[in-house]
Structures are given as structure tokens and as C-alpha cells.
Image (tube, rainbow, N blue to C red):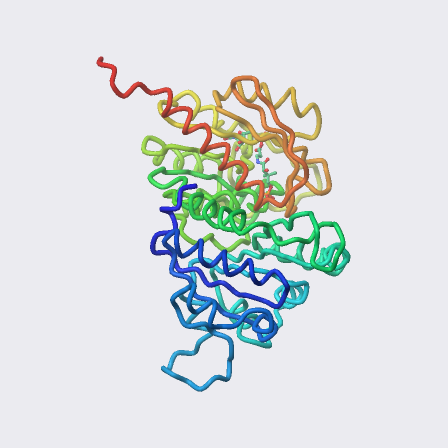
Length: 413
Ligand code: PMT
């Protein structure tokens, strides 16, 4: 367990009212021992199980519990905690707190702080099996996951209510490990320059019309956002989209395939990883009219010419770079994807069946197969594009590790 990643990190632990509160004491103790500054806030129900004094002694910090307590120093407490947190952990998380957090209810210090923070959120649910399996609780967990919250899976075993089943709070070491993994991952691409392309290109016909495609940019933006979160210097070369730019990326906005080609090539030499999620037009109109094309009675014939294949070019010029392509297919996915992997000289290719309703263009989810240069392949189930972005970057990290392990730093010449 690499505990050094917690040095100096500020973790706000929200303790809610369940029998597993006693384990939260150990979680706080372990986080503090690992170097984190831990601030505890408690719901009124939690104080029925363990007193505030226990957490104050274990954390070495005052414990926040009352929105309306007499002000000691003028600092709006829920906002102060919300702002200082590098990470917020709710342990144990009752069905009630999950429901409130999912719905944005803010009726006490813990829920108000949850609503006010921009820190990553971790919930460690603990409850009776029936409560956990209830569709309402499952729906709330789905909502929280979709918003990016991390849910630490409850364990199975003997529950305080006397039954065997799922719903136990995981052991404190497991909870602390999840927090450690998060901070370790947050630095996993530090020192690397990652270039991501996203969105579709537009090939102009005249000043008001273009040939385009259905890419919304969601897949590429999710990857760029995740790369920046993992500490990479992130360049996002993006076609026109309706999306907000992710925090922490340098964006280069382009329209046509040739503009994208130029932007990518300018960055390429100093880039470590390229991930080409953009849908690039293979053809463009031979002529672009400088004036709006007027309709006439007859047919209009367009002549299209080939656009550069940017990824192929990158494959030809490849030196130290790791190249990841996407393959958007409607049929023979595996066959076409493997051919692109080979022809474009990629390290791996992420293939999506864009004829599926829940995958490919314009969806929040994707279902992919990944094909590697060494012949390995993997099929992934349907998942959010956010989750897939993280998975692709995990594979990138594994490849980078292998590449650097392969370099003999001591050989001469
Ligand atoms: O943006 P979303 O709505 O979220 O949709 C996501 C997506 C479907 C666009 C994405 O998941 C995806 O599949 N992107 C690749 C689309 C594509 O152009 O695939 P392709 O199979 O035609 O191209 C293969 C690879 O070569 C791609 O990495 C592409 O970026 C690259 N290419 C293609 C043509 C070209 N002229 N230059 C290129 O660099």
C-alpha cells in the first residue's frame, strides 16, 4: 500500500447514523496515520452511536455537526469544509444519505456540505440487504455513479440485523485502499503529454453548408477530462461540438480534417500519447464555393476528393509515441478494426459498433472491443463513456509501463 500519496491531503469524512459507525473510527485513524489531514462531520443520528469526542481525539481536529452551532470563528462551516476537501468520504453511508445526496437535498451539515463541494465523492454504503436491494436505493446509487461519485461496494456477511447477506460495511483497510488508489491514479499520467482528438470534422461546401457526421465529441471529451485528472498535460484537438471544455485541458478548435491534421502534427513530436476519438471525414468537396450555392431545377453533382488520413500519417512518423485509434464500424467490426490497427501502425484500437442504439455516436454509453498489437483482445460490456475513458487510460498506463520497462537504461551505444 503506497501511503505517501496521502501526505498533506485533506479528507472530509461524513459519518452518518448506522451501526457500522464504529468502523468509521478506524477509517479515520488509518487515513490520519497515512498522512492525511482528516476533518470529520457527523449527522445527529451518527452521534447516537459514537460521540463526537471519539472522532475529535482520533482525527485531532474539531468535529462539525451542527449548522446552527454558536459561531466560534467566522467561517461558514459547510462551505469551509466543502472548499478545503481534496476528497469527501461518507462512511457508513446509510440508504437515507444516499437518497438525499442523489436528490440534492441539503437539510443538515453533512448533506449541505455534500452539495457545496466540488471534491471527488466516495460513499461506503452499509445497510440491511433488503434496503440495499430496494429499487429506490439501487436507482440512487446509479444516479450517484452517473454523476461521477465512487461507490465502495458493500461486503457480504453477517449483518447487525441478524441476517446473512450483502450490505456490510467493507473492512476499514478496504475503504482506505480505495482512497489511496484514487490519489495514486490521480498522478498516474503526470509528466506525460496526451493529445486527444474529439468530435466530427466539417468539410465546407459553401459559406453556409458542410459535410459532417454525427459525432458529438462526448467520447473524446471524456478521455481528455480523465487524462487531465490523472495529471497529464492534455491537448484536446476538437471539431465543433456543443460541449463545455473539460477543466485543465488546452483546447485547439478546428473544423476540417486538414485543420485537424495541421494541429495534430504541430504537437506530435513532443507528445507521448495520441488518442484519436474524432470522427474524421475521409472525403471533402473538391471545390468550396465562395458564395452560397443556388438551387436550380436539375440535380447537383458533388465531386469529393480524399482527405489526409491523419492517424495513418502519425503511424508513419511514429518514434516514441503510443498511438491509440478508434474504429467506428457498422459490420465486420473485428476484421476492419484489426486491419486499421495494422495499417495505421497503432498500439491498440478501440472498436465500437456504431449501429447499436446505446453505443457509438451521440450516446452517453459505449460498448467496445479492444485489439492490441501483440494479438491480445478484450470485450467490454456497456458502460458510460466516462468509465470507458478511465479504462482506456488504464490500458495506456500499462503500455507506458511496459515500454519503459523494455528500455535498458544502462546499456551503452
Ligand atoms: O463523439 P461521440 O458522439 O461521443 O461518438 C464517439 C465516436 C463514435 C465518434 C468514437 O467512439 C469513434 O468511434 N471515433 C472514431 C470515428 C472514426 O472516424 O472511425 P474510423 O474507423 O473511420 O477511423 C479510424 C481511426 O482513424 C479513428 O481513430 C479516426 O480518428 C482516424 N482517422 C480516420 C480518418 C481520417 N481521415 N483520419 C483519421 O485520423
